Length: 351
Image (cartoon, rainbow, N blue to C red; front, side, top):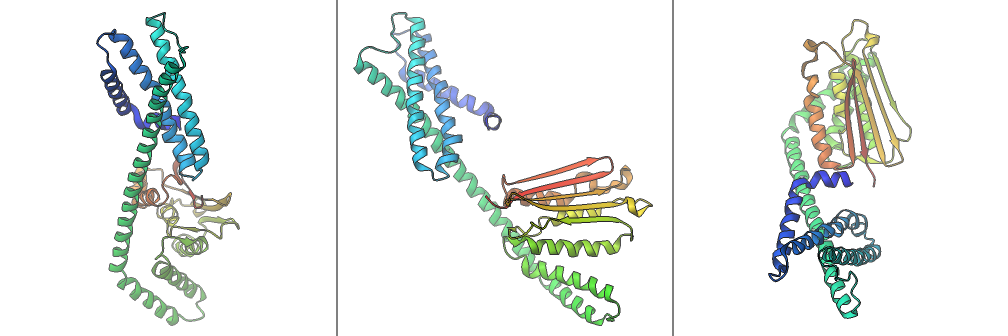
């Protein structure tokens, strides 16, 4: 998390905290006192203020406030402010003591101690509330933008679906007609047409919701693989393994297809069909993650690679859909090893 914060804020926050330190210096500047100790104190106060600021923003708010653990959030926030208020007072008065040995770090006068401690506690509180407030505002703005993107994507998809609905329906009816025209003795042809009909039915009538049962998605993939087998040589090495526990949950429809489609589109074309391989594995881990692994042999000669070198438009569209539908809840890995192209998709379908 610390690494993520450092990379995210970089120079911008350094500049902002510098400006805050300069503002603090000018607000509390006393012309009758030396400038350097006052500048050092302003810098010290704001340096320490970064701790309650970022701890509140990136620990307390997401882990406690967003999770509705209000009591723990309140208690930890109070302790945080009190602790850093005291640390701030101790650090500032230690700086003062460097320039004036007569300064007592912890004042003996209770009234002065109370005033000084209250002053720095308020500074720590402002930093904590500022960090928490900015985090909430930032997350709210980001979520609204993401919802707007998802909504726009959904509208575009629905419009595209409505525009193309006439042709698929016509094709669906024609396929059913052809099915009944095929001689019953030709069971293989009738089975292929039936699988194609099931795929069209799935796309037309099932994929109209945000989430679909994984069993239906798997059935669609099995039909797709069965049809794709027909265009490949008989001995092509195609292996599909789906664990028994891949059931009873939902994911966004047609998310797995681009990985499988890409494998069939770019499978190698070696003289020995057995050396042309596609392996598909789907499993469920910890009842919260679905893991899809697809690998295939591909042509290593540059002249035969085509668009495969760039990952394909299907993978790019999949990446965009994953970012919109499963932000920070997915992991897509694409690798090339020798003549094997390997993709792995992990989706967190449950919190």
